[in-house]
Amino acid sequence: MANKEKLPWDLVEEILSRVPPKPLVRFRTVCKRWNTLFDDKAFINNHKMTFRFILTTKSKIYSVSLNPEIEVRELNIPGLNLPDQEPEDLVDCNGLLLFEMSRGAVVCNPWLRQTRCISEPEGNQTSLHFLGIGYDHNSSRAEEIVYKTLSVYRKDVGYTHAWKIHDFATDSWKDQELEKAKSRTRPSSSGVIVKLHSKRGVLLNGNLYWVASYTTRPRFFLISFDFSREKYSRFCGLPCGENHDLDALVLRVFKGGRFSLLKQCHVTKKIEIWVTKNKINNRYGGEVKWVSFMEVSTPELPYLEQNYRKPYSQPSYFIDDKRDDKRLVMCSCDVIGRAWIYVVWGNKLISKIQLDSVVDRWPLHCTYFPSLVSVPGTRREEAELQMTRRQMVLLVKGKWFEQSNGMWTNLTERTGNTKTVFLSARMTFREVVKLVKEKMDITEDVDVTLTFQWPSYML
Image 1: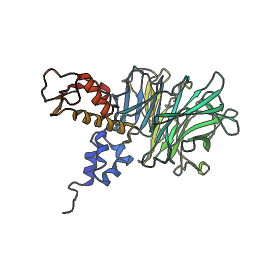
Image 2 (image 1 turned 135 degrees about the vertical axis):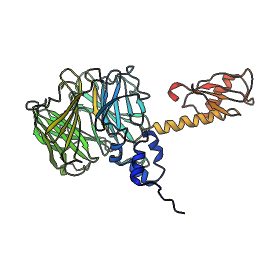
Image 3 (image 1 turned 90 degrees about the vertical axis):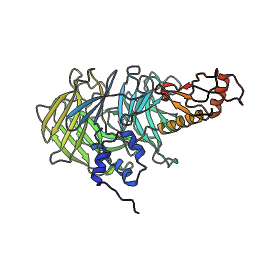
Image 4 (image 1 turned 180 degrees about the vertical axis):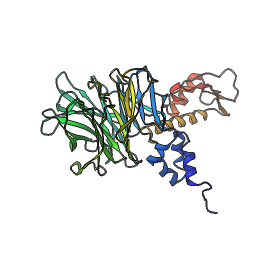
């Protein structure tokens, strides 16, 4: 008999929208229709546990939802221990977050509660700044996306910079020197100095993009970094013409394959937003056409970039046009560093809410659209961990039980030979066997009863 759906599809969607995000990853294998649904941005945006902004302070991380009321929640993400490691910057990369720390970085999917640490390369690289996450779309490892991070650092006390690429698959670094450049800049092929308006890269189709300008004139354009070619290039012009350095100018991804650009004049506080007419082709920026999306000019609007000397001072925003009137939602800090959410509908500021629960001033913030993309490497590490646990259970005959405190015990009785052994998730089976036998001080042909506790990071 044919397998038919017993529930209406709308009801199935409604039920799945209430399932916590982590099980949804496993549910991809149920059927093709479910797998397609989980890639649908509309489904993710309508999920009951979705959120639109991330804010982080010295000690806490928060999510901000609009359902439709604004709701702020404190997030507890394993592996991201605040305030032991205070974030210095925060970059959103299409569902993944890149936290720049004082030493190294942490990649995180807050929706799936997954993290992975990136250690700094060996050597003395002062002022190593992480610019974003991308991937090599021409990789020979076609079975999976090869994610990489891009960072830049000052190589000496002069103006010499170098950029580094970290490969998640191999956990290795590649170093490449930049020619003479100034802070937050990079040179063009002609030797003209180019200044980045913000060092936070915007990820689209594997490449990173920034708003930039020549130091000799205030006309802005987009530059890109192609991870396949490991090369910077000027991508396309911007519709806003000449701008002042104090103008807020923020690039975002729009509808998955296009760009949006927000500009706020630092004098009039007028906001203008443009979007690209068509989807972006990584190689042909000359064909990009920008169209006006909306303009907002109201005396109730604040100036959104209060502290332009800080890398995170620019506003975070998202736009949608699903309704009759276009909506703009922004997160920004006021003159004393308090976080606010502004909602503009049409040409009117309809909501202005201070995030009182975010107690620390000047929080890092970014727009965030949840994703079911796993943090690179976490699936493999989790699989290795489970394999090690299964191998450990097979060491001793009898039935194993896991207690609530994380201890594993075996029912086989062997009085006097019960001890505690601490293991690493990266140990091979042979290494585990050797360690157990050495700990018990017995020969390999003797069966033992072993009680052990996994380290906290493995639980």
